[in-house]
Length: 415
Image (cartoon, rainbow, N blue to C red):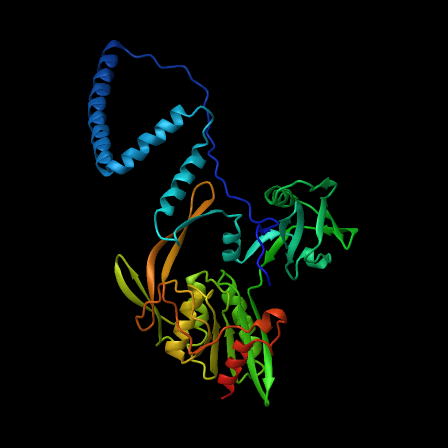
């Protein structure tokens, strides 16, 4: 499928915000004091003032010692911008932009990713609040790019390629994707979308609900009286390991003789999700990867209680990265799985996601990882056991028969 530009979700989880309630008490009448009491109170106040003055000076000195020249330069310029810019300044946006600028000076994987409504966050979470459509902007028209299964949009019969004309009675003509998404997200009850298909206008009644993104799917390929299970995993979201396990359980109930795990195009995701998936195949005696940080280097082991005994092949390509490479390397080195396809991407670093008070997020590289045997894959990737480029025939007519990488994996398992 061709990749489209300007694709966004119809909506997602609202930003979280915090408020501070300030209670204002009514002023009461002041008590009266005698002369001696007043003098005593003044002495006490003077002593407290001296002590507090020294404490404040001490704290300021300590704080100043922690502020290096570079940070002091930033603070001074921040103050200058706020005080002298001719228009209104949104201080929150100013700080967010400064953080984004800092991250741009680091490695390519440290980056500002936007708020919790961003596609990045939605895909990693594995679910969002919405009606179940993705849209794109083409020549000024808002067009449905994809429809998620089991959602209100799917039940209403919406399809990719439908041109959206109205939300309720409001025309979407001239709207940006952000404006459209915000309007859909703001719908608290049922709403209607008027769409055009083959020149005819239709109306779909929708309602926002929690949409779970499907990242794992499975099938069984039967040949020569043998059953080979096939699981495709598109991302390592928070719920991908649970979906993967459900698909694996379905396949194993049918007594499969082998398994193909398809990680082609899977750019990674959560490390814990990768750990959980590997642990479905290896017992706890097996190391699955190693982590290097400023504190040192340590091995991480499988959390499984049993090692499977059927053959496994893993399909990979140049877009298989990060968590995909952790799974592929662990199954190759510790299980004996065979890798088929192209050299993987080569992302040997680990990022942590940080959320700012205003809901904006950024990811920062904090660690690097090695394979279970201590090999680095950064900028090198993992070389497959059988190197194959996907056939042009597959792109023209996608099918199991035209997928030469899948065919090679089946050949390896059957032999």
